[in-house]
Image (tube, rainbow, N blue to C red; front, side):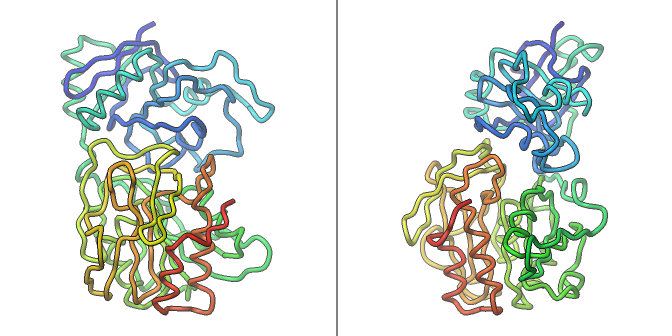
Length: 387
């Protein structure tokens, strides 16, 4: 049996079917993580993306029912080098290949994942298609299908992955805070990390308004990760501006960081090939502390890396930068209790260097502290406890 991966610039890779057979389209990206393939597959931020894993062996521990970050697989397609022949883990309930077939995810196993990754690093992320079985056709025809598929720039996808109805994740132990979490593609581990710290988390649809958020009387507001182009998310940005005007403590991650930037009047842009994996070094500008962090994003915030800049909500600054490419990795307001980071402190599969950011958010909510010093503490991460 044969499977084909076709990139929009005409590059073609050949392999064998892995998972379901058929055809699928999406933005071709790569993930450098050596662990957490099940979390990657079920991360809503990968909606409409074909993900290539750079780790050579995938599927070794099979699939279980405890590790998914959502109720389904969100990746549009999957590319691996050497799929495991046998799933070996006491927690495994089925093989990864079987899981992908059950979920209807079209994939390919091929020897050229390193060449594919180098190609994407040189040419940038681009549209692609995976074809097998009855979907196979001459390459020229397959390329035409790829070129007819939608691009990621300009894609408004939060509404496709958000919860249809609000729900509550109760605090674990004593309830200390009420948090309104806007689901832009939230992962299950995020409200769990908050619940571990005594937060009752009200997970809300992406279409929620500022008045609906504030009607809950939350001690804090959280904006999650999610897929798509942040330039399209006008509704969530308007809701966030209302939260900031009200002075309610705010914490955002990943897509939430980009929307925080937009709420502050900053622009966003598409990265050449994005950051996806569990090995991104991020430096805190003031302390110099470096954390290894988990990432999954293809867009970033445009902001001055040095000094402060003015916003409608007072002065703000960049708190963290990526040591690989100087990408903005964190923002904060100096006079209001609001901060964000571009990476994932919940990181179920690790690393856990940044887990203390949830403690910092709780510190902001404690007593409704809004002084500049508190906001600074919220983003220093020097007090991060890890997990």
